[in-house]
Length: 367
Image 1: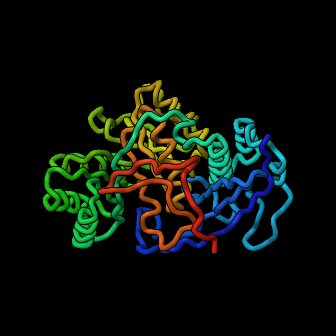
Image 2: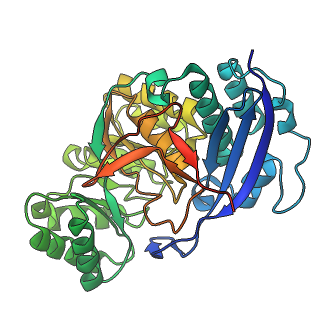
């Protein structure tokens, strides 16, 4: 028996080297909730969470409070002191309890689940991906360009290509005319061999999406992420099959129930974008992946602005799923600092699992 000795929860300012804009907000700083779970044998499991309040209705303050703290207040004894003294080998039971006790706090659930999985797999002396059942060795990630003018978009694309990235994801949704021009000009600049994905963050109506698709056909876009508002599920279902195959459901896909609804005939999309911070952790992500497997839907794995901790957890989970076709796990690339190093290797835009047990991360300092 290996017991949980202590759990620390920290609010950490990871800062941001490059502010960016998407269809419904501008982001200029990054804070994460970081969990440090310590076992009685000295093993430390790491977890992290950063919710998107506009998508899941959970703020970082709410996530921290659910984890047992409110800003700088002392740790509360309820609810998560209940994990102290528990056997880490009861992983499935502990995760089930977390899901039940924090139904409205997906980022808090995610942070705790990641920490538990990290500690458990370190006890087993295996990487997390091996415990989950590795299917994929490596995959290129996209890197994201926010909403900005044509000139700025092209300049940032050049910067990323110089760093070795070969998949660009461009945020759209504020101005249809400019969006079309950005895609046409970007394809002209980067040539035929660079992949381009777009994310409208619910910024279009059906008519606008049709026009965007028709006028960017020659741009050969790899996928179109969440073009329509979440409320317009029937709009997605009614799209022609050639457009629907390119649609990656993001804000429309919070948990397994949404996955089943999106997959119900006639299906609403060809791709599920799974984010641990939306669905509430590794176990729920795997539930969504199971729906995709049964429905013939491809998987994309996305993120918010997150520590290497949760990016690594998403990568391990993604590489354990046979339907994974796309990863968009660039959420730690523009952080000014982090609390750990390691987790994954990144070379010329290709991500792979770093050697080590659990998540394979090493502490660099919480302060």
